[in-house]
Length: 174
Image 1 (cartoon, helix red, strand yellow):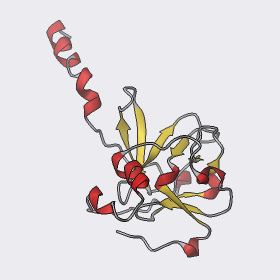
Image 2: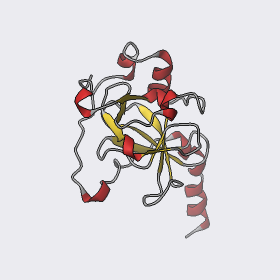
Image 3: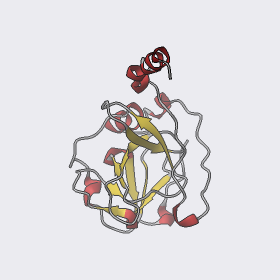
């Protein structure tokens, strides 16, 4: 490689954090079929009246709530964790665990319910994940979770609601 080519290519590196790169949705667990979720074509501002002010900041402005502030940290009943905006089921309670991070954490999402993208907001690369339906920011996934998957899906409590049973799921809103 010529020195000039190398220098021209490396000049792009400082601006990479300002670009968003889309990654594929999460992998299918245990070779099960993945449901394809149709994304809503609804602008983020349209959700403002449907979620709390704090929830809107987390879901659609990608803020992060204070660690330890969510009551969902202490939710240990069987049920489903759904998107606080559109009510899409995202996590089953059997995959919730205490990570010690201060945020509700899961070992895996419901297949097909999550989309991911690269996040450079803290300068170093992280993987942000969001609801596959409304695009609402949920949290970040890390590779420091328990076996067998080794994943920690660290979620903002304000981005979730908890429903006890599947037959009590609210109708998807969009």
